[in-house]
Image 1 (cartoon, helix red, strand yellow):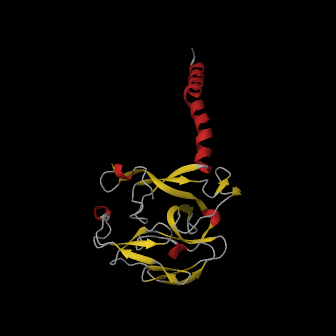
Image 2 (cartoon, rainbow, N blue to C red; image 1 turned 45 degrees about the vertical axis):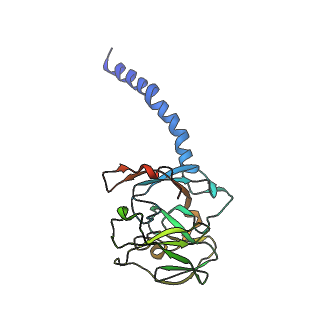
Image 3 (cartoon, rainbow, N blue to C red; image 1 turned 30 degrees about the horizontal axis):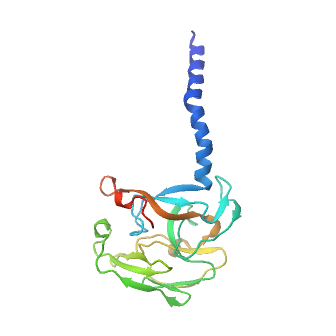
Length: 232
């Protein structure tokens, strides 16, 4: 058998045994990940302690709407993000995909005073946490301050680093239709709407509700079994 025939036979074998099955799988999996459900690897600590560096979070892309796969074009919309939702979106600054908490929705007036949020002119309730259960996970600053913030029905942790330079104040901001204010739960270690501005609803990819799996990137990516399938 000559070289040309051998190459042709090998190519046919590779197509039938490997490439064709992979192409069929990709034809179903990639559109599914694009429009229905996906995951998001979190490399930074901007949402600590709710989300840790190394968490793999589930993204429900049908939470608010149905999109054409591989685009942000909406076929239908049945819901909108609400305050306290953790959402995945594209940054209006550079298009980076981020995970943050919605702290303000259209019609709200948001203000920050001394690192405490005011919603529609009323300060949110904060409850300091004396014992920090996440102390071993806080590598940024050993003097981190932890508190419960009551933004929605379920209070959540927020963390502050008193020694860090951060934007802890801004004047009242009225959110127009279709615009959202996003913030990280690690308030002094998050690039969010304080820096890149409001996020358009069309830039929101989906909602995150739990951690699929977690790897401790500060300890050789050791699995954090206790965070597997944990609710956010």
